[in-house]
Length: 607
Image 1 (tube, rainbow, N blue to C red):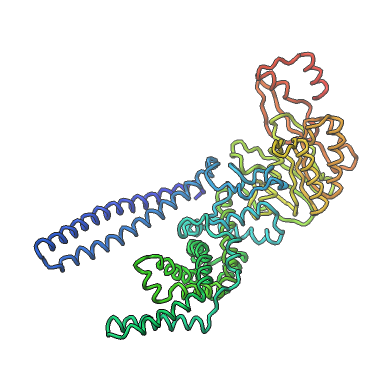
Image 2: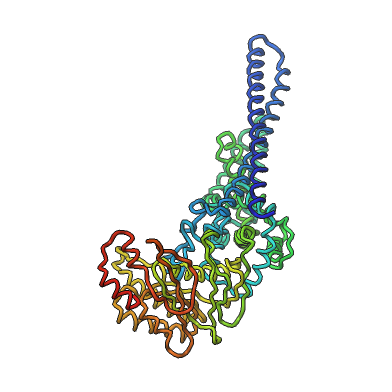
């Protein structure tokens, strides 16, 4: 079945399950209320007419059973509703109505990044929002890191079959997404690392034995005093000694209990994810390796975290006023603090690895969801010789009906050029092509399929100057921001090996004389450093950059047609320099009075 048909069928099935569970919840709720009223009536009857209390057992047991049944039905409904939303969100992605509905990753954006802002990697309607189905913070962080920096070729080659294997496994990916409750704010790696690697505050030894012996002594002497008439002196002595021992470690115990509170809660949330990953069986080498890491410690992480959760349940129980005397009698706080410190000493070294595996699987699942939903996209071939050779390249953020595809070939080997100098009128598709090339490179080295019919690509460090703005806070003009970014691109080309540069309307904020000289110098610098790239411009005088006799740069263009007072674009890349512009036509279309003589002179000049 195609993705849309499959998603619609699954959403309908999950909705039907949720509706049936909701109906059961309503029935059980009504029945539970009836049984409760019967209980109240029996209690009143017993109080008034002195009826035997044995009559209470049957409705009381029935009430407990109904409470359990209600909780189970509510859990089924909640899980089915969550699954229904998974497929509804998938249908939104297929329909192109997903923008603004998912995680946008703005927390990972950086104003000084070489391409993230220019290529819409984060934010509303971004690449990250399109891809991300991760439910944990570490999963989002991992996916963002893949988009922010290219991975090594061998890593990408390992991820591709992993993504391909997970793509059709809808049941597995659904279970991963439904594991436990809301885990989006769960433990971040930095917080986990700080807690896991903190020095141990309490150590097992004679003092722990003393705590246990004194707790036992206090309990025995209390029972002896209450039940067997022992002298209270022994109880007082045991309590006093227990108090002294507790005071000795009071500060450390408080610190251990407080420090473990949030990490333990977050780990409890991802225990379901880890349990699901432990049960997975994979053929792709990268997936099998990740799964193996979960079993390296011997104790499965879900089991270890289950112990931690039970300890923390007792820690929470200490806050109950009814349970507090028992907690004090058993020195429960001290013993639990020792247990927490021992747990961290045993499993803390593995905790970061568990989180790393969760992050890896969630990021891979995000790429797998994209691969399943876009079966026409291809995994790129990663090669060593510097090149970007795409056939039928499009932009993944554009709807298929408006996504015109083009071929782009860049390489060191002639006759393929290192750079394309693209001219064209306003709105003709120049910036979109730059973004398509950039996003394809970013997704390729994240391990994802790309919007193309074929792509051969080598490792390339991306630098883009496409979407720059004035900054009132920093007192910087757009032109100054652009030359700063161009300097960054030149540095990337020189320092990070083969680079991909994407320069939109290069130096358009200055006069034509300085623009021509400056643009030629910048392009020459990055080409001499071995970079590949694209440059767009409105200034046809810059077309002469390609006339250096080396063949490193060639002119390409987009064109348009003005028909019946309307401007039509076909967004198709063509060889050569554009021969006409649409600025004057657009000005006339909006009602501006353009002098005819001046406009004819401009058109004759090719502006």
